[in-house]
Length: 467
Image (tube, rainbow, N blue to C red; front, top):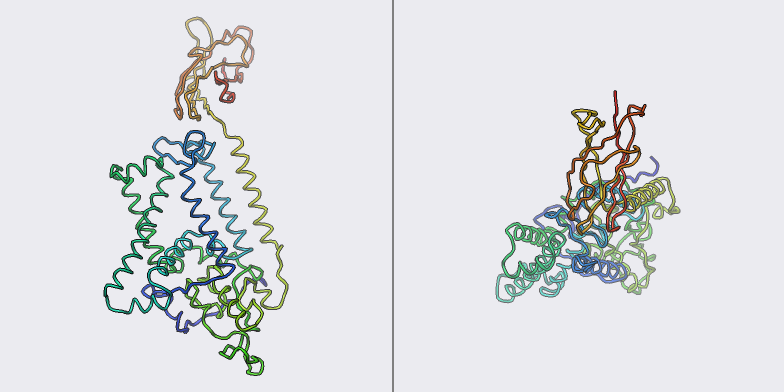
C-alpha cells in the first residue's frame, strides 16, 4: 500500500489546456525538437516502413506474411499455420499482455508515446499540417480567417495528403490478408471484390478520422489503456515528471537575472511544455492519465533551460520516488513477477512453435460396436482416420499398424492428400484371436510420408478382442 501514488484533483484552468476534455476543441500542437522527438520520429518511421514492407517480401515462393482466410492458410515466413494451430494466437496475446504489464510498470506509457499506431500516424498527419499550413500559431490563425483561395488550397492540399496516407494504410493493412500483387492490381484497375473495396474504404476512413480529427480524443475518451494503466504504476515507474521543488515558483525573468534574488524557481513559465503536448496537458500540474510519455515537453523544456543557462532535467523521465528525493528501485516484486511470467510465456510459445507438425492424424473408433467377427472368422475393429496435410504441397502417405502380431490392415495402404486438405478415411484392423488372452490391446497406427518431407506420425488406439 505504501507504493501507491497519491491522487489529486487537477482543475484545468490553464489557458491552453482548459477545454482539452471537450472533443469539440482542437489542440494546435507546436513542433518539438530534441533527442526524444528524434528517437520517436525514427522509431515511428521504422515501424511504418516495416508495416508497409512485410507483405512485399517474398519467402520460399510465397508472401512472407499472408493470412489467407479463404484457403485457411496463414503464412509467416517459413512457417505455415492452419486453423488447428491458432492456439498459438492465444499464446501471442498472453505474451503481449505480460509485455505490456512489464514495460508499463518499468517505463510507464512508453508504448503510447513511441510505438502506438495512433501516435505514429497522428504525428505523420501533423507533419502535413506543418508543411501546408505552417506552425501551430499560423494554423490557429488560418482556422480563424474567412475562406479565401489561400485557405482553400492549403486545406485541400493537407486533406489530400491525409487521404493518400490513409488509403495506402488501408491497402497495406489489407495486403496482410490478400496477396499483394492481386490486391494492388485489382484495386487500381477497379476489379476488386466488393468485400475488399469495403475493407479498404473502412480502414481508410478510420485512419483519416483517428489521426486527422480525433487524435487525443481517442486516447482520452476511447482507449482503455489510459484508464487501467494506474493499476500497473507505482512510485518507481518511470514517467515524464516536473521537478516542483526546483521549478517553483514560476515566473518570467531576464536571462541575466538571478532567480534566487527574485524568489523564483527555474521554470520561466514559457508554456512550451503545454504547447508541444499532443494531449494538451500541463505536465507541471502533476502526473495525469492523458500523458502518453512522448517526451515532447522534456525536449521543449531542455531547450529553454539551455537558452537560460540552467541545468537540464526540470522536466524529465523520472519517477515519483526520485522527485521526492529518494532512490528509484529498479528491481521490485512486481517487475520480477511480470518478467518471470513473460519469460515463461515466451518459452512456452517457443516450445509450441518447435513442436508444430507438418501433418496431423486423429483416430475415431466405431462407437456402434467394440468389435465384430467377420466372414473369415477374424476379430475386426473399425476406425475412422482424420488426416490433415499441413504442407504447401500434395503428400503421399503410407499407412501401417503395429503392436498386434499378424494383424491385417483392411483399407488403403497408401493415400494422397492435397495441401491443407483434411481426409476422412475409414479403415479396419483384423486379427486371428486364437491364443490371445487379453481382451484389449493398444495398437499403433503409423502415418509415413513416401517422399520423406513430413515427419512420421504415430497414434495409439485400443483394439478390443472381447468383453
